[in-house]
Image (tube, rainbow, N blue to C red; front, side, top):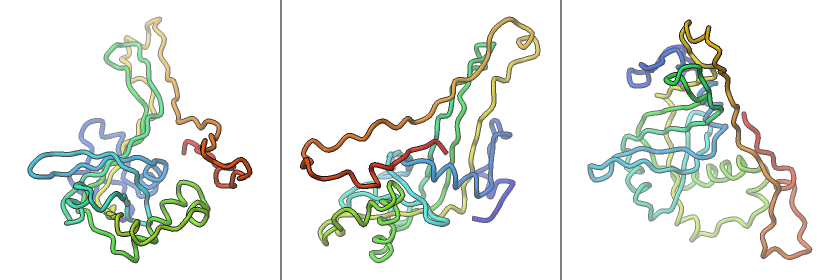
Length: 220
């Protein structure tokens, strides 16, 4: 995807609240990288489906994976058109006027044809995904056996046609409402990390590895 300050296609152009649109690569990639869960929309047997799944990015591609028996992945690996979306809820905006309450958010929508990742690239991609969750996790865990490799598919989408929408604004109240005595403001929201919980089946003498002990999930 090339650097862009304007939409790369008509379907990535924001029409409603177009001033919230962002088309540069860095903004789009930052929003994708900050997330773990995305939604994939596609058509199967003439019916629309939207499937939530985990995602990760390598260079100009976004990846997702699942079971080789998955109807979703079997359909997507044929190169069908898909719509990829990811959203972060950043705050609730309270306005002076009832119709102006809003939310602060960052989102990305991308269009294109999904493609199957071949065996050699699949192994590299899954290692990258695992280490995105926690650096060092791939080398620490038992490597997949051949049956597990065969049971897993990886799909990717090139991010040639994508746009972001970012709202970090306060309420857009009218002039007459600004002069009122009603309060307005925003409540920031973020994903909070809690204390690590060891597996109840874990032997007492096994120390917590650094990837878990030092893990930090921070809002980006």
